[in-house]
Image 1 (cartoon, rainbow, N blue to C red):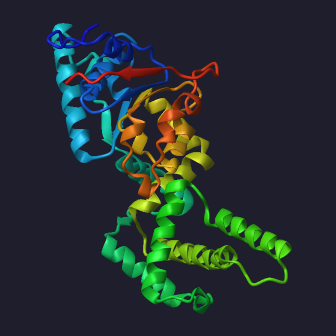
Image 2: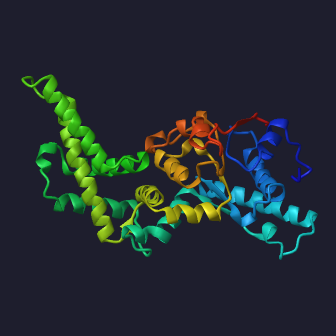
Image 3: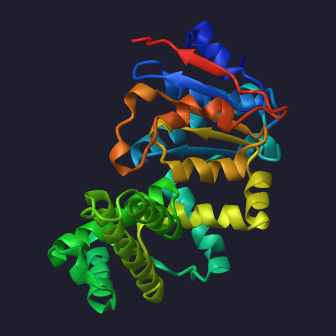
Length: 328
C-alpha cells in the first residue's frame, strides 16, 4: 500500500482503501478518519488499479468539504509522484481528479447538455429573492381558480415554492402528483358519495391546483432563462434519463466515483447517480445513516443503507459494506 507511511491505518480502513475498483459503501461517522481514507483510496485506485487521475470524480456537499478532500488528494498525489519519480508525461499520475459539490456537478451537466431540453447554456442561477418574485408573478398571471385554495396570496406563494422544492428533491413529476391526487378524489367519491367531503379529498383538489402553479412557475423561469438550485438535480436527472449520449459521456470520462456524506443525498440525486454509474461502475459512497440532517429538503438516509442494491456489482450481487471505527 502506497499511502503516507506516517499514518497508521487500521485493518478496517485498509479494507476500505484497498477494495478493488468496484462499487462499495463505507459506513463512517465523525472521527473515523474518512477524509484521510478517501484520499488514500484515490491513490490506491491510481497506483494499483490503473485508474487515471483525471478519471476520478469526487462529490461532496459543501465547498469546505470539497476543499479538504481536494487538498488531501493533491498532497497524496504529489507524494506518489515523488516516490515513483514520475514525470509530467506520465498522464495516469499527472491528471487532476474532479472534486466538486453535488450541486456544482448537476449545474455543469445542465450547462453542458441542457440545450437538449431547450435550456440555454447562459442561463442564470437566481437568488431566493428573485425566485420569490418570479413565483409571485406566475401566480398573479395564472388563470387557475385560486379562490378555491381559500388562503392568502403569501401562503399560496410559500406552498408553491415548497412544493417545487419537494417534487424536485423526491423525483416526483407534477403530472404524477396530479394523477395520484385525482385517484384519491375518485376513491373518496366511491367510499362516501353522500357524506361531506373529507379533508384529504379537499387537500387533494387544492394540491392539483398547486401542482399546476408549479408548472407555470417553472415555465416562467425558462422564459426568463433562469434556474434555481431546486431545478438543477431535477433537470440533470431528466437529461441522464432521456439521453444515452449524456450517460455515455460521463461513464467514459469517470472510471471511478467517490461520494461523500452520501446519507444526505436526495432521492433525485441518488437516481441521477444510478442512471450514470450503476451496473458495476466503480462507485464508493461514504457516510453514516445516523448523521442524516437534510431530511427536510428531501434527503433520504435509506440511500446509504440500500446502496448495495442500488449500486450492485457487475454480476448483479450486492456491493460490499465497510465500517470505519471512530479513531479519535
